[in-house]
Length: 380
Image 1 (cartoon, rainbow, N blue to C red):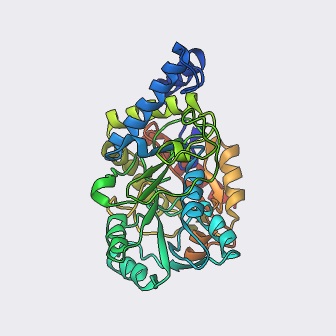
Image 2: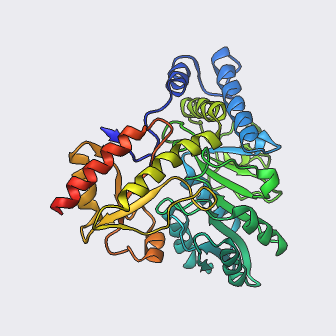
């Protein structure tokens, strides 16, 4: 099977990641819950991962790195831990359901929101769209760093500067960008960076993180044991304990630390360059095939990440995805949990077929994909 579904989760995982998970399962116990060597070793592993993430994303406080189940959990922590009845939120029109569903639930509790239009390849118009969406009740701006459907890259540094101009914190969903686009929390001014561990960071599934970049700290969604201040019934106020209750996923975090190390050694800019070579090769070849619908201009690194979605004639995207899978190629088809992004592009009725390469894919696999798409196009 040729795997091109890396926007969902990267596969394969580097050997260093697999080895780190295996070692954690073999030699670690519950961190911070005992004075024995197994517990202490686990606590050291968790701190090493926290420090590695802080350094990778240029955050000055390792304790502000909060490990979560996934990027969705990180986003929910901020949204539900910050917003109150009467608050207004600005989002982009490309947001994933990890943003839209919790906000939709909160609309029943008095939260309102405005979706700012995004103009591909025109950051000035996008910024003005966000500016015009802000009102006196706006308490949070939420912005995906890159669309998981169309690969559109948003100017988050400029949106962050705009947010701070109005004294509003910003949450950046880096599920599709972490590990592919270099991110500096200190330089960008991002208040809340939410990232998936299992995508561009090459960690295991079931890992994610929230990095608090500013002074505002969300209220906790869950309270419980933290291994600290155990005499008190009150949740600790300090980070990371305030937002990390219960036994952590030690093996997953160990694998995430190894994944961050893998990306750091290979450098995000080199990984992105490699993936762009593949996706631009695909774009150029697909543009030559009759009946292929491409919805975006040829992707360039300034305005996109290396993701490409398309359709074949009037065929249902999921039928195309199934046919490609039957022929040995794994892609993602449908709505990609992002109906807002499909509504913006006019593909809500049938979705699209998404191709997302990784550092491990090769040009010959792109050629095989193009050949297979041609075969599918001739029969659909």
